[in-house]
Image 1 (cartoon, one colour):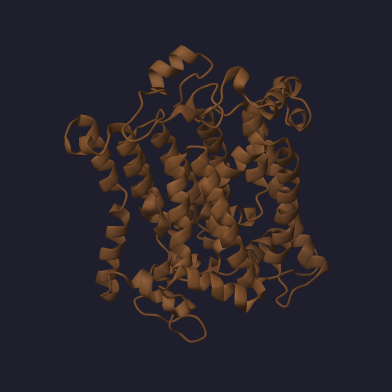
Image 2 (cartoon, rainbow, N blue to C red; image 1 turned 90 degrees about the vertical axis):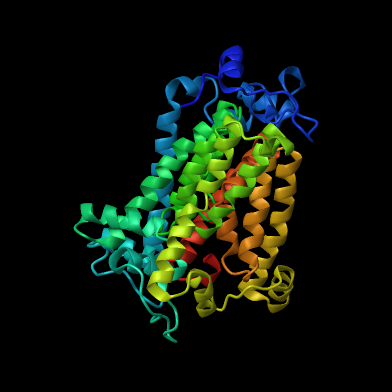
Length: 448
């Protein structure tokens, strides 16, 4: 799918990695994607010393198999090993944590280890997992009937992930929880390979990609890539969409983004980075000259919201309300409001809401950092995906942020550009991933 970036001339001619300056921007639209680029502005001898050290395999970079270990372990094998290691560690932490520190609801059957797989599956099904399972098993309810007040329904959960889990459940004898877990973990493994290829398109070196893989496997909220949640599948479609976007294949980007929209409602917002990329490529005025390339862009943009329109039509037929997926949010105490007020209220309330609000504030410099590095489409999508959730409250924001592609790209850039970050981020992320895994197994609400 990708061109050989080891040959600079071939790469430039085949993938159009370097284009002429575009309208309104004093830069090439995707100079970040050239072979020797460094955050869009450095190349060759002008690279900062931290990047040169990483490429030479000195210091922390040597730990990630530069030079000697590159010949011992292939990149694909490295990804598989990290996937297996991270899943083994985190699943073990979750199970043993429940064995030694039983929560209020004890999922462990005696004797210990006698039904470890079943017990672990039940432990993983926390919070919204039950909603995905009901969609996979029974479809969408015609009327609200769940939660203690009986006024919640599964309309808030888009069909892409649970329907995929329903198909996978056929392999497990219609065990829908097993099907959902299989989809989440296999999708995450696929996402690791796609992420590696995406970084190649952006011109990241092998050591930088290795570090990024470590960060992704031990992300603080990596638990959501293991649990029966839609994050893994959404990440797969996100990586594919941004990969095609970086190659200026706008039609394919729009087609793949349909999977984003079918999986999570924020996926429909991909129309904005897609439109921005088109403006940067063709110029705003030229968008209205209907040639072949412009028509591909317009068609790609039109494809993105199509799954949402189909789902809304289905909800209208089922409930009489096309926006039932939004209106049912009232059952969880979420309503449209002022995001600034929600953040301030969270800081004043204290507890886990204060933690959520602090993470929201800390996410803003990450958006600015990504913009400064000239990843404009990714930064725009990052900002939108921050704004949309907090318009209805601060709950669950940290896992929304950490599981988004622009956030992963930002931390990868930070690790590549700073030797200190290369040392600290993998360790800090691993510690937090273990902590959140323990908290998940004990139904701690701040993990949601």
